[in-house]
Length: 387
Ligand SMILES: [Zn+2]
Image 1 (cartoon, helix red, strand yellow):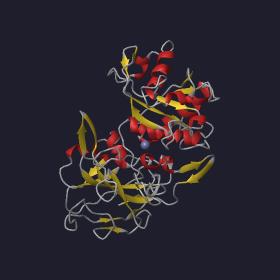
Image 2 (image 1 turned 45 degrees about the vertical axis):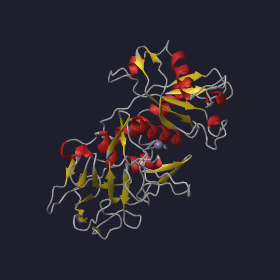
Image 3 (image 1 turned 120 degrees about the horizontal axis):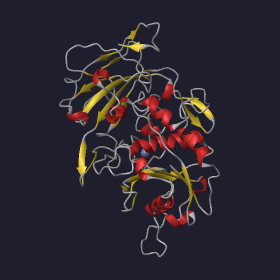
Image 4 (image 1 turned 180 degrees about the horizontal axis):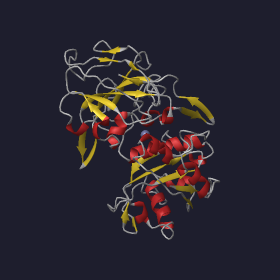
């Protein structure tokens, strides 16, 4: 992470301070828990299977902020975010061996975040009606390399470092993109206040809201389930036990047909509790419960891929040309819930449940019924289990 200041705007924090805010150790007592640290959030979400570490550097750019948002290359001082990344990495080349940030040794820098000061947040010098520095994960189009390491993508954007929880959650979300997940929210032009892709009180998800734990779909895509932690329904009457997704890697997958390496259509049944990464979100320093009582939710997933100039992407994600702007057809992820709440004791999910249907077929005959029963607690288990 490079905290970039400009001649006309500075962060006002040292690299060490930002390092502690962003990549510090896990601390359940922190008032900022569960976004007290990006590394700790990813470690909890992945059950210790992703050990995300990072190092923070500071850099002051040569030109003022607005100099890097020129979009017309004919302008004499035409400079883009790629140029800003080139400039920063070049300047830090003496103190960084970029091979240290290519852990899988594929010759490509694993991930880089350029975080800009809060003064850049509301800038719009190119007058396109959009803030220029909303955090994003984007492609690097230049051809620079440093120490033999090439660049492919970057996370870049402006955030207020004094709003540490928002700062951390934003970069946890963008790093989610850096590792391949799409946004789950909607692209709606007629109602900017209804962008939630996963609706209702149960709809929290890091790639939808930038708050809340990753869902089991996201965890599946990241490869965080192994062996029989992912239980796959194969037909007939079956009984499964679910533990809290915040405590243990587990869920039940109901396939529509051929799984195609999980790049197909299926349902996932999971059990969430208001613990760990699902315990809270923040409005500045105010810690607010994500939800009070946990329960079961069902995710309708369609992870079909298509290829775009030798790159693969989710066919139904918001950046795809196949994306359905009516929001009625396929989406990568939908949520099925009970009156915006979790399914709880005794609830039955069947073809009368809103949304519990495969895409574009009459689904009644093919669909299964999910019956939820609480399971007696073992004394040493961390929460209710469901059957
Ligand atoms: Zn996003």
